[in-house]
Amino acid sequence: MIILVSNDDGIQAKGIHLVVEALQGLGDIYVSAPDQEQSAASHSITVNQPLRAKEVEFPGAVKAWAVSGRPADCVKLAIEHNFIEKPDLVISGINHGANIGTDILYSGTVGAAMEGYLCGSSAIAISQCSKKVSMDYGAAFLRRLVEGWLEQADRPRIMLNVNIPPLPAEEIKGFRWTRQGWRWYKNAFEERQDPHGKPYYWLHGDAYDADDDGDTDCSAIAAGYVSVTPLHNDMCDHAVLARLSANSFIKE
Ligand code: MN
Image (tube, rainbow, N blue to C red; front, top):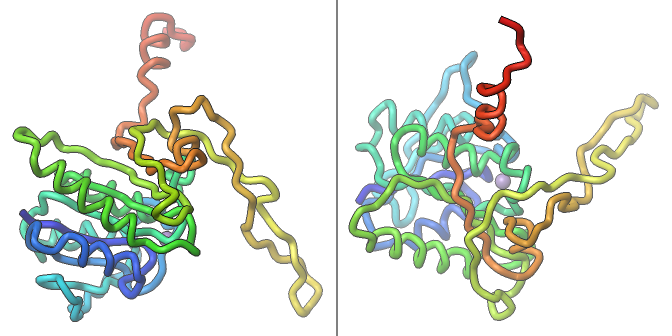
C-alpha cells in the first residue's frame, strides 16, 4: 500500500511526524507537505508562481518533499507529477486545532485530503481540537482506523474528517460517526491600532456551534467523543435540485 502524508501546519510540525510514526509497517509512506505553515489555506492552489519541491530527510518516510505551496499543491504535485505512484490513501494532519462544522470549508488540512480524494485516492483529514493536549491518542486512533479500513474486503473510496476531542486520553469516551455541523464565531475581528494610528483587524473569534441536534461533529466533540465524518466533493444541494427541477422559478 502507498500512503501519502501531508498537512497544513508545515513539514516541521509535530502532528505530521506522529502520523508517519503511527503508520509504520502498513505501507510505503511518502510525505509532501508545505515548507511553512499554511493553515486556513482551504483547497487553494498556486497558479501564478512556480512551485519548488525540496527533497528532505523525514524519519519513517521512503521519501519526503517540502513544497513552497499550499497543502493541496503538495498533494497534487506529488501525485500528478508522478513523484510517487498513485497512493491508496492520502492522510492530512494531525492538525493543531479543530476542523469541525463550517471550519471544514476553510481548513487547509481538509483541503490537502480533499485533493487526494479528487486525485482518486481514499483520504483522511485528522485534527486535534486543542493545541494544549497530546496528539498521541489521535495518532493511535488513526492507526486503528487505517487498519480497520484495510481489513475491509471491498474497500470503497472514502474521505473521512476525524477530530480528536480536547481532552486527556483517559477522558475520551470513544468515537462517533457524525455529520458536518455548523460552527460560527462571535467577535470574529479584533480591531487594533498600528503605530501610525491607523486601524488594523485581526481575525480572532470565539467559536459557537449553531446547529446541535446531537449527531454532528461539533456535538460529538463537545460530548468527549472522537468525531468521524464522511465527506465528499459534491457541494450540490440535492434536495433543492429536486425541488427546483420539479418547480423551477426561472421562466422558460
Ligand atoms: Mn493547521
